[in-house]
Image (cartoon, rainbow, N blue to C red):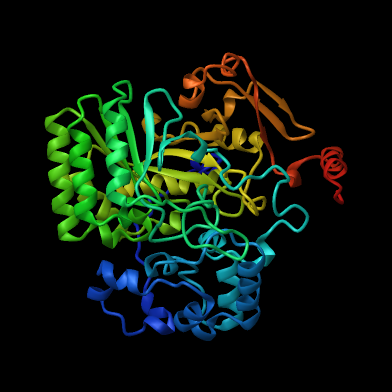
Length: 461
């Protein structure tokens, strides 16, 4: 390394991707390469509770860790536990196999922090912001039919399913997705999948100004392939639809799914029709740390691109203790863009859902991170850090129009009406004139700001 490089705030070194050796974990010592690459084996061996985690990791984790995990499940967790072997294998991949050392490395691992949160992770004073909401983005309020959110003028979100192959503690759709927890009785989709899809397609036929459809859930990897392909083919018949985006964290958490011959062949059929009709077909995934980007992830991304998908893009979430440093973000982006063929696209501020305060970062911190990553990546591969503001939508963190740093209240405006506002006979006239608030985590505020919130909500500062 020359002196000039050493003086740079961030030093890029190309690092080949590596698949951690799952055989280092006692429960997987006899797992073959063929089993590991099998999507059904991966699904069948997901970790769903502390007992199953102990069956895999055994005594490498000490009893206090399991106790902390169990307490968190009872008192704080908004998502049920579901960790595929692929993801669990990326946690503490180089830790020494002595219980105390392994436990320390496991606790400190950034991926563990959102896959397997424990009580000591949570903010001790404000585990939830007093204004936190289960459906923090009010998506269900903007359903035009069950599961179809119409927020932006030209775009809709189609939630085909309310399950994922992997559950993340910070899930923005924690109100709907996954199994209920002691803290959260989940909302439910009630229509049969075929009926829900039929209603979605019927709505889109009547809305020719909608050109962009994000097909999500949950995760499209949990939709049976024939059902998903059938829906996509009918969607592509609509001449008004010009962009289709498939949302799947499984590309990172369960890449084996996207490498199945049936799925690869099906994606090629869908991509061929999309190309013939001039529709931009993309896949959006969810990687939050460089440790989750492995050779299998790169292989699955290449398979999608080879099948004819135009782009594979990443939408991460900015989280304290996971990726909220310039180095962490750039390491992840270079692994995605340079090694896996996945375009860094967005990093969202973690939404203000219950018990998420320890993950969230303030707007001013996000602004500094956005400034810190500029100039290293190609412009087209430099992600934007955005705040998904309730009743507004995605806003680049530098688009804030006013900001009370003392109380951590930022204000945002928008240049369109949501579909409910556009349909409303009254009450929507000021939608383009209003300022919409967003709130920093209270722990990031100066003492005077923390005291203001404590007095307002009868809490200790």
